Image 1 (cartoon, rainbow, N blue to C red):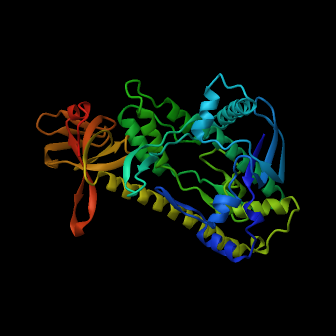
Image 2 (tube, rainbow, N blue to C red):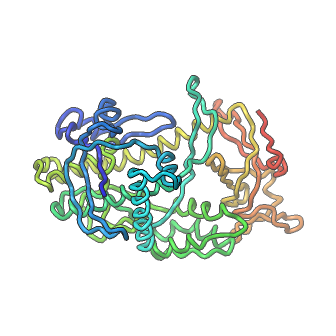
Image 3 (cartoon, rainbow, N blue to C red):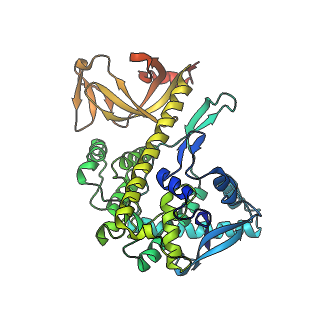
Length: 439
């Protein structure tokens, strides 16, 4: 079984002007329906694009692997590949699910999927976390570029299949690079979150009688699996979204800069991890490809990778640019969400994710957005912080409680300095059941 990655470093030479620009950009920034590339389009869209029935240069990791997903041996090599098919996740899923399809390609997909499931189970047994984030997908008008519709991104089994292959490749490459270059490898770690960062999750879960153990990643993973409410199928995903927000940021680092126990990747429960699988869009992967080439004796390790001060600058830039790209991507989603709602009012299902004295925080699953609903008169309510509930002062009745379903009216309002903002207001759930949308 092999993972074949476009051989970007065959064309991107150390010390070249293109390499300096790619190093400065550090990553491709993904916005809604557009991107700011790290590398020129002739590379990203043609020369290094793996297409069906076209020969392409690749850097391959090939395993001899048993049917029960035990890796017997690993091979790293430069290669020329000719892909037999270029499939979307949906197309690959259709092939796997359609029992009438018994061609060699489909059977290979099913075999790889079965191995991926075993690899995933082994990761989970080690304590890897299955987290969640409210990723949204926009349908864009091709003429105006305005969003026509927005909804949650759908993950398929094939997404997970490819993810497991990429994780296995990244872990295998990390081990091989560190073996030959213990002081010059570029790795990625995920620090264990401090206990205080879990407090919002523990408070929210505790308010509805759900126990979450955060002593280890395995304990947390098992707690998240048990965090279910039969009457609310969406509850578990909400808890996982909250857990994701408690995490520390994963970071790139030089192998000679931190102690070996700090190499650990908490979220993946992996002792060693790096990025090898996306050199078209991440400069970190370009660095790792160059280290692996030196490991294989294909070319010497570039001088810059032996210079610790220089590598500190490269690594710091990788971390800063990666974070900035994430922020830009989220800002782009926020902007398009605002444009989508600018001329309409929509009533949508929502879940209460936090209760405060003067407002409640709600999450709207359909649109993947979260916002505050201000209370008209906070003096009418009493806050029970432990139970995350607001009771009416007059009669003691619970009015709002965390994880309760509610309905919100979403609209855009112009505020100070003509700045537009989304406004969420509580509304009657009967309007939701009637499917009311005011254009």
